[in-house]
Amino acid sequence: MGGSGRDLDPARGGAIDAFLETARQVASPSSDAPRLIFALDATMSRQPTWDLACGVQAGMFEATARLGGLAVQLVYFRGLDECRASRFVADARALTGLMRGVACLGGRTQIGRVLRHARNEAGRGPVKALVLVGDAIEEDIDDLCGVAGELGLLGLPAFCFHEGPDSAVAAGFSEIARLSGGASARFDLAAPDVLAALLRAAAIYATRGLDGLRLAAHEDAAARRLLAGMTGRSTRRPDARDRE
Image 1 (tube, rainbow, N blue to C red):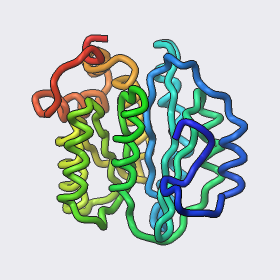
Image 2: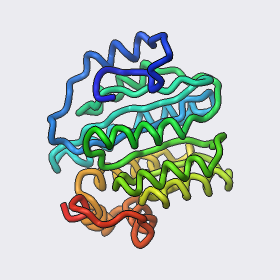
Image 3: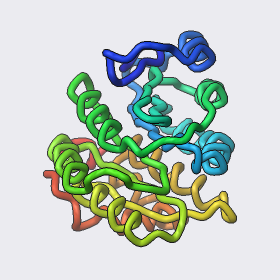
């Protein structure tokens, strides 16, 4: 999925013109930039959070600019079976342009397709982290956990950020995060700075691993939340990215 925006199901036809056209025009990041997949629920209930994410996602790039930069791929699902991925982009303006080309539509969650896409993308080249933002899980949690465990074996942690008070959703996101070696956290639309801080912390991990997250945790509450979720719970073996 490193090229222009594509449907994650090759058998499906029909392009979203604005999304694809913008995806073709954005600049590609350097080949050595750490890669992060930014996945969003774009079903109808998500419009307020989509707008929020569009406004705060720039923090992911700002947090890592002095550390060598970050390459981010946008993945979203909406409708009955639409799930798409952009190319990896190297700056916040490009990602904002991609997001503004998407309108939320009613439908069911497709978290399983997001997790499988992340797994497949990691098979093509290193992916440091997956960020998943949503408010619902309408799929079999055991199936999702199976793929999350595969991400853990690949050393690809999922940072699952959920909006709203639903305890079942919180438990599901937490289990996906745990099995992948990542962390989960709740945010509220009334406090947009929380999501912005969580995205920055995830970007710091993607760029500098656990050591970078530990350093950020001295002054950043969001980094402390992610660090607390990851430390001692990861199912994967330590690798070089944790020492970077």
